[in-house]
Length: 227
Image (cartoon, rainbow, N blue to C red; front, side):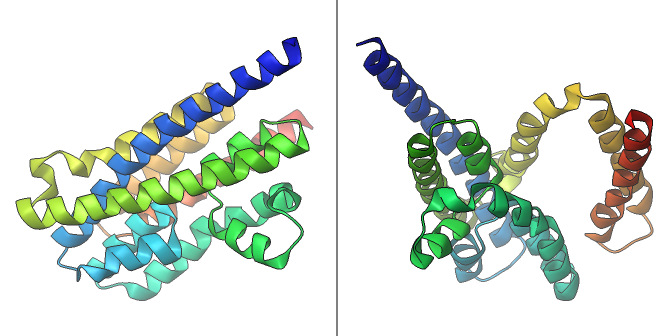
């Protein structure tokens, strides 16, 4: 009886977390849709990106670079940002299922949040259920938010009118705050931010963000100290 109660409690907690993240994804997706329209991109572009690409950070960066006239940099930046999905796939690949169709669809639904919730589960059956629940929930809410942003962006003309331009930075801050408890992560974040700010006046849009990756080199120093 206690085992069943714990299972039901865990399921309720998972559904509650999924609903909370879905609400956040709607807000951030709306900011993406509105910003894409504000940049003058065709209406179908944000819809296509949210459906085919489905990668929040890469989508924002790509839209900014395309609007700045750097489509090649947009492709490179997107590939670089999403390279983290390679180790993610190795960690949760078996969770998606054994059929190739499951692997293809599951790979498309893979995000940082989905992987984090999946790896938090110990039981293989719950891991699989968690992966698909979170993946489908986030995909649906992100595309719903994109549609909302396109409609609102087209109506207001300026995403700043509704504060949508701040939704994505706010969401990112909420995601990274727990990680900043680690000293090495704080140093990397601060150094990367400083490099990006310093490079902004002299480099084309989007490139300062890539330059911020230099901050990752400080991790080598921390690893050597730990060794």
